[in-house]
Amino acid sequence: MKYLSHEGETTHKQRNRVGFGVHDRKGRELGVVIITMQVNQLPGPLVRPAHTLPGGFVIPEEYSGTNLLQPGVYFCWLGCATRAGDMFGASQSRHYCKTEAERDKQIAAYVRNARARAERRSALETATIKE
Figure (spheres, rainbow, N blue to C red):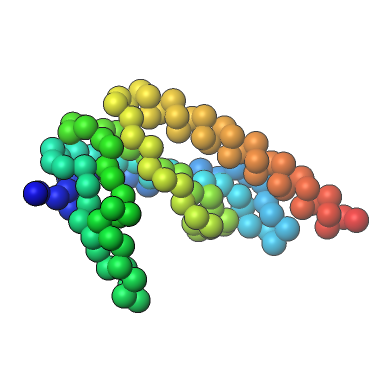
């Protein structure tokens, strides 16, 4: 049996930072970084082989994850919060889109929601500092 060892060729990778103009209690500007890429998904079995993580922890084949994407070209993106322009916290999982327009629409919604969360957080932290 052949295994899919990676997702395929990743190209056109770009990183865009968006600052929201609001700050946390430490004075760091809140924002996000959006990473976009194009992935050429290779054909092959959907099961990854067993593998060993750092520290010697073994992930057996049945728990090592599956790739549910059909072969083809996908327009991917992921977002991560930033503080003072530096990535902060966990990044989100990748989102795979069939078209660039679909990806752009998802990114716009993500940035809009992230901006609203940042504004609420900033307002709460500012109110807490003033009290």
